[in-house]
Length: 331
Image 1 (cartoon, rainbow, N blue to C red):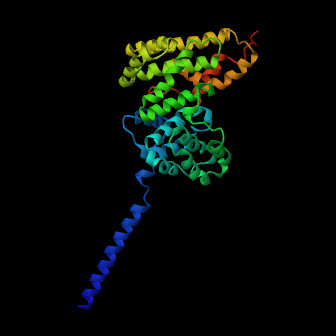
Image 2 (image 1 turned 45 degrees about the vertical axis):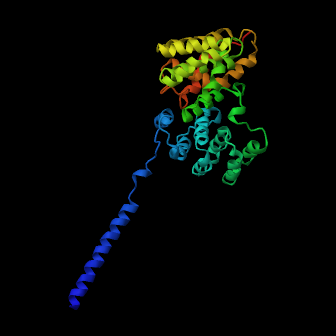
Image 3 (image 1 turned 90 degrees about the vertical axis):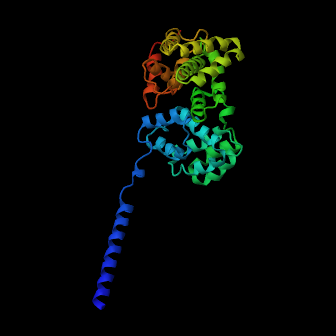
């Protein structure tokens, strides 16, 4: 009986040893979840484009980390789309906004601006409290945080297109995150600048507003219906351009609208502003590279999914090529 008992014990120990080794191998084996949720820039685009139809807020922290990993936040002036998108997701998840923001860490200090600015852009009633609660995690960004909490840091609602063309991108990001026509209502008034012939920055914003509205409305029936209704509620300078947007989207003539958009920039490039012909204008042109570069890239068919800007360095070179900044100083 003693030998039988010893044998039973031995077999039990062997069985438990095998089970333990199996568990350990499973725990130490690379999990499928270890693979990046957003491995490429294309996956970022697809997520943004489809989010409002199928919201997945739990993926937002991984999304933000992917933006940092892929180098898409290197220039905050070129990141308006991302700031607006993250802000929109936070705004749509008010009770979870702080938790989602906390899960975005760790982030390198140079990329923490997306947490700061997105909370401010969200317009949530408690965004300052949420930002203050996260301040200890961002000691290198103390000055910027103080600016938003106590200084002149603006929410998206407080910004105007005079603050730069990235504001247009931010409102589009907010729309892609929420599907809210409030964001579109902020974009439509910029159409009044679509035929501007004196201010290149205003022409840039107006042209991009016109192109992106038509491009997205041609893919989004609900957006197209909204723009149709809006025509009667807009002032005449906006009505005319909005009518062209609707017609282009209805008839799938967006390519022609792109051609006219780029032609208007080419005309301004060739002739310069009608009234403002100072050399300083050509120096400022580099500041507009992102959004106007998107107009040029759009004409080449490089815009995907209707998103208002090309991700990466392609867009930023577009306007510089259009403007040919090395040309002779205007008289």
